[in-house]
View (cartoon, rainbow, N blue to C red):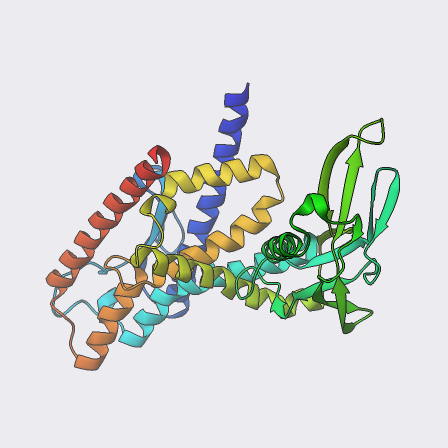
Length: 378
């Protein structure tokens, strides 16, 4: 039964990935249509076709057996003729071809923006809002006195709460807890010697939005001990900030203002990860190919359906950045070759360019297979 349930989520993950591919290729298709390019086929997936149909313009619409990619094929796109026919792809002006190449990337980024907007309005993401300024333990109520219910926390000690351009709330609070423990060790010689209640001498500042205004407040930890029924034997001791929170859900206007920054944030994380990978600060096993991506989507979706709202903008931004890279066979490399042609007033030999892209495609396929294998065995 568990296998069938997981298989269901695998199917959902494949549908999500197909949606991403569809969005990307739709960008090429729309730009091609607007600029009057001759489109021969619009395909989702590779390999043997399982569905094909020609529309009234003579364009072949295909669904192929391997749903891990896709393409929008233009007439004469891979021709090696130095003087292509007038209606072929390579006969079009370089600036038009560059727009077509960048259109898929643009559509991926727009998708990241739209789903970031939906995510922020529906469930929020990284910015916390205070639900209660107290917790109840040992039949007692402990309060974070300066906080109020409804406060939106934006900064901790001046550091912005932002998953991409700042720090996450969980990371900042964890850092403050470590600082508090260091303070306790230096001041009292350990938690066991510290007095119950509010931790005197250590606090940190938080910036909150309250009734539309930014305010600085002081947060403090409290040391709370619990005892067994005899009231003497210590059961546990810990530090608490004494409040509960949930992600802040934005109004539509607020989300419109932040969704662009959020989409750029997802893209920035991809760029940082690429840099860490290139500089050997991130192991190659941390990178996933299509199979591991599908597995990750399935697992996250099975955990909580709302994770789809996070995965779609994150993967969309990932695809946008990945396809922008100047790696042969990717859109970024096509833009580079077309730009060189535009500057030189003549193209690099078409046969040479096609060979470079074919080799790049083979290397990419080999790479994603290797990283998928490493992802599962390491």
